[in-house]
Picture (cartoon, rainbow, N blue to C red):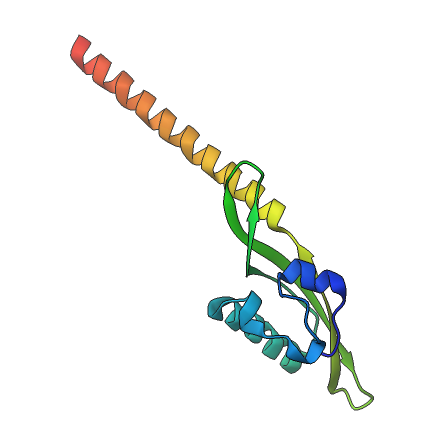
Length: 132
């Protein structure tokens, strides 16, 4: 990275430090750093834009005591030189934690509904068996 703004520090959860003192492992664990590295290599080889998601170390709370790691969407675009080589990459991070929270909540509610239906069907089966 050559530049990031104040909002980057807020989204990433990295303490505000001089740019040259940014430490990747402060705001991202090894598996997520591997994801970022994979897409970085892809953009350098294909010279095409990439869009991907990863988690940060920053913890997000929903206001009701539920916590989860923050998630971001990265959109990165290569800037090509006259010879076609990548001279720079511009990118953005969008905080999508609230969307991931909503997905997780919807999955939980769907799983609960499926389990309730299964239990209801088991009860009906048992009742029918006893009646017979």
